[in-house]
Image 1: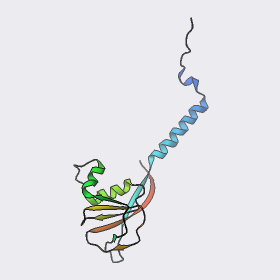
Image 2 (image 1 turned 135 degrees about the vertical axis):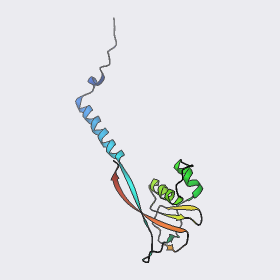
Image 3 (image 1 turned 45 degrees about the horizontal axis):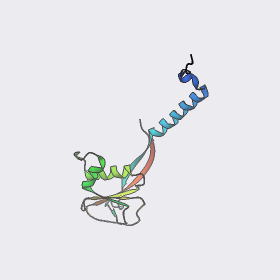
Image 4 (image 1 turned 30 degrees about the vertical axis):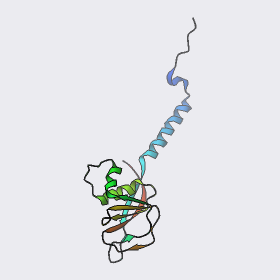
Length: 134
């Protein structure tokens, strides 16, 4: 009677293959555990007055849309924090305006060069650093 060869499990793979798999898993795990953390620094004049970027933003998001983007529309999170969160999630975001007076968040994928004093608007620059997640 002819019988099909039985599956021998890991015995079919060489020890070198096992080492390669373990190495690859280690590399992938390390990559997943490192994330880009963004710190924000408010843009202010020497006397401490907050300024607002007046260059054309890359992305404009109304405050009522910010909570939809987080997936938690019933959460009580201030719009200023949601602007920072949205900038953190956008890999290309380098700066943002929190425009309370207009009810929107403006994200920049470039560094604005023109700023002005504007009540109801605050600008923040992103300072980036790679940090491991524990």
